[in-house]
Amino acid sequence: MKDYELMFILPPDLGEEGAAKEIKEVYKMITDEKGEVLNEDAWGVRDLAYRIEKQDEGFYVVLVFSIDPQKIGEMERALILNQKILRFLITKTPEDYTLKTFKEYQKEWELEDKREEAAKKEQEAKKKSGRKISPRKAAPVAVAKKAEKEDAAEEKVESGEKEETGEKIKETKKEEAEGGEKVKEEKETPKKAPAKKEEKKEDTEPSSEIDDKLKSIIDDPDISL
Image 1 (cartoon, helix red, strand yellow):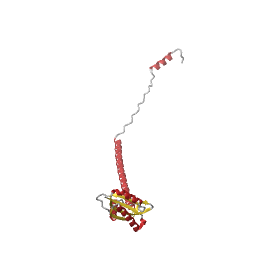
Image 2 (cartoon, rainbow, N blue to C red; image 1 turned 180 degrees about the vertical axis):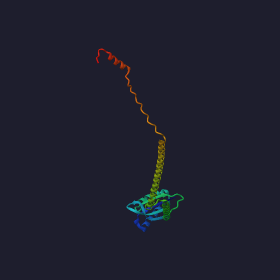
Image 3 (spheres, helix red, strand yellow; image 1 turned 30 degrees about the vertical axis):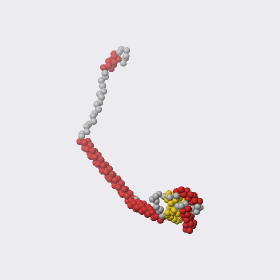
Image 4 (cartoon, one colour; image 1 turned 90 degrees about the horizontal axis):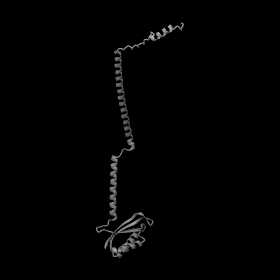
């Protein structure tokens, strides 16, 4: 004999009496195969994960029973032929297995929901503590920061202009001082008279060759003057 768990789903429109009748039929099926029902848990009407035979809901029942493993095949065939059972699942239970009722599962689910809610609240609290300022609140802050930046830029420009004007004033004074020194030097140093150009002396006297030519012309008998 081995322990097994059977979950089966009945149509929700059977009502409590119809559901109880079908549960008794499953009991009889187990006892006819010389098995024994150890525990029962009726979950009631629950939403189905997907539609089965045009049904969105089903009446869930869980049974823990012991039976000869060789009888499981015959039992599965009988469950398939039962038209009132929408779905079923038979699983072999481990040795230390204890049935958990729907109420116990529900408590666990509620605890998990509470833990998730607490975790979400904690995360929201962390976000709120470290979150950024909302746009409406941030607007005046942004304007103030912008004004501060503009003032700082203006001060920087003014300081730069002052430095530039100071440097220009220093350069101007330096140039004036250098100009004054140059004027003073020019006044102190006497001006030199411009050098006179040497006039070329023109040779007024005729050369000796010209005198000889003239003399030969005068002495020539063929030339009459």
